[in-house]
Structures are given as C-alpha cells and as structure tokens.
Image (cartoon, rainbow, N blue to C red; front, side, top):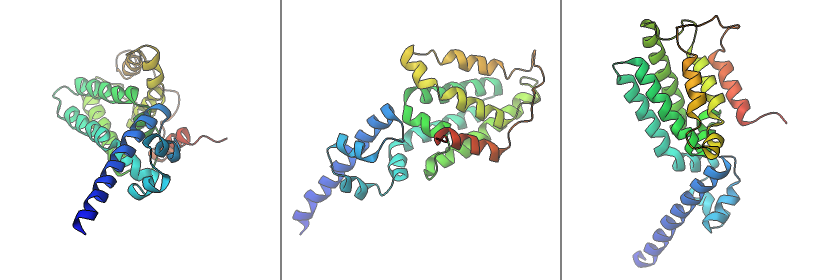
Length: 216
C-alpha cells in the first residue's frame, strides 16, 4: 500500500507545481480574472485536478502570489524603519510600483478590491498603516502638504498603478515619470488647496472594487 501510494503523492505534487507555474504565466498575461479552465489547459491537467488542489480562485491566487505580496509587506516594514520618512516613502513607492509594473496579476490584486486572499488582506491593512505613518512623520517635518490623507495617496496609487504594466511594456521604466509627478504633488512646497473633501475609507474600498468589477 505504501509503494502504490507514493507515486500518487508524487503525481499530486507535480500537478500542483504545474498548475502554479501555469497560473503565474496566465495571470501575468491576462490578469487574475483569467478563467481557471485556461490555467488548467496551460498546465496540461483537467479542471477536476485543478479544483482538487485549489478549491476556489482565491486559494489559487493566494498560492501564486503569497511570496510577492509578503515581499511588499517586508518592504513596508523597511520603510517604517527609515530614519528619513521622505526617503522611506519614496523607496517604498518605488518598490510597490516595481511589483505593479512587472506582473499584471499582482497589479490586479494590489490596485483593486479582490476579496478572500489572506495575504492580500494583510497587505492592504499593512499598506494603509505604512502610508499613514510615513505621511504623519513627513507632515510633522513639513515635507508633505497638510491636507493630504492616506486615502488620497492610496487612490492615486491605484489609478496610476493600473497603467504601470502597459507603460513598462511600451518603454521599460517609463512608469517612473507619472510616479515622480505623483510624488511631487505630495510636497508641501507650492501646494494649493485641494477642491473637495477626501474619500472615506469605505468610499475608497467601493471605488477600488469598481475598478475590478466595472458596471456593464
């Protein structure tokens, strides 16, 4: 029984690796809304095999993107430890946009309101806390405009970040230009009053969800 069971376990592990490799490719090409049967075909397995390994889309996304999302959380920790909060903010934004530009699937996850992915949920909370802390520290030093709030920054990042993969494909590194414009808009020097009130946290969540599931 042990001998007959061992090959099955090896096959199951091999199938899992095939599905993950195929999912990484497909998500990078098409985004995380890509049909699961496309991933199964790319992996050379049946749909039933895919669902045995990953019971739903969220489980597959978690397995594919866990390491990438966790690396962004660690980058946020490094930014929090920076002695110079402006340098920490700039370095963290560069790291986030590098991830957004490199992989359309990761971009979908980080710039929209997809639910049910544990590491992504941790990242969203950590990301907001990281930006809030860095903005507060920068504001205390007179480095950022007094009226900018965390929701302003998160919305701006999502809007600009959605274009990052297309910009990278057109001209590598060209996403750094709109990012630099965004960062300059945070500076206290030369700031003009903003015309409306910022979004609340709930309003921002609704907007990001709409980016992922626009009304037909």
